[in-house]
Length: 290
Image (cartoon, rainbow, N blue to C red):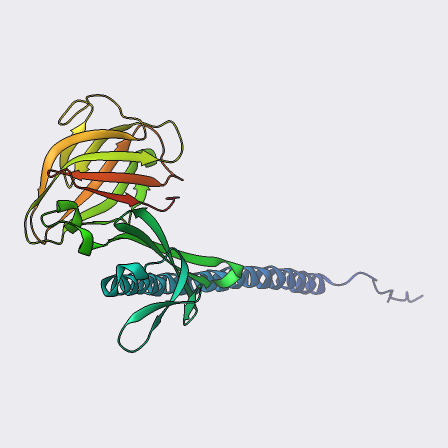
């Protein structure tokens, strides 16, 4: 009797199908993971580009703000030259009337910048001028540039008064050096026609128990606790130091490059009284240095 051949079909997929199906599933996972990685990398790249653009914009705005603040000081000098009595204490805006500058209102605008000029009294013949430019940065931040100088009423100074032609510039003053123990970038200019000689400094600061240990004019040490100068000890705020006499020729500029202290000097404002060889004096008051 002839036997029938079995035709029962297996319910399992064939090996070829399983292999093909396995390859298809693995490729899908790879696609998902690759897509996610591409998305993450693209996001990071975009953020980096945007951050770089934001930094470039911020840097450009700060340079323009510096010019706006400098214009505020130049305008104030022009106002002083016209009449020292025009330097009335307060906070002002500035305006150019076609031939001269004048104070107007309590601020003015220059493009995206708001500018204020603050006037205060230093002594009987000197006013302090602080020019501030502010602007809106991205992310809700406020940008600020502050420049300051002193302006002297030269019309009431006696002839030969050395302090009358001494121009201290401290708009670039910063706290720096190792562990931020130095007041840096104050300069002195002789705006007169004869040499002047600096002999003493009275240096005061607003906070902390730090003491001053050294003073440099350029690269020259002009006072320290071990000499030159006197007294030969660390000096507290408000002390007067006699320095190695420093002569400034007409038109020359010298940097008081480093006031060295024993502690971190961030968040201090400084008052410095300069005494010349004829005993005339000039006083500056810096803004708070962060």
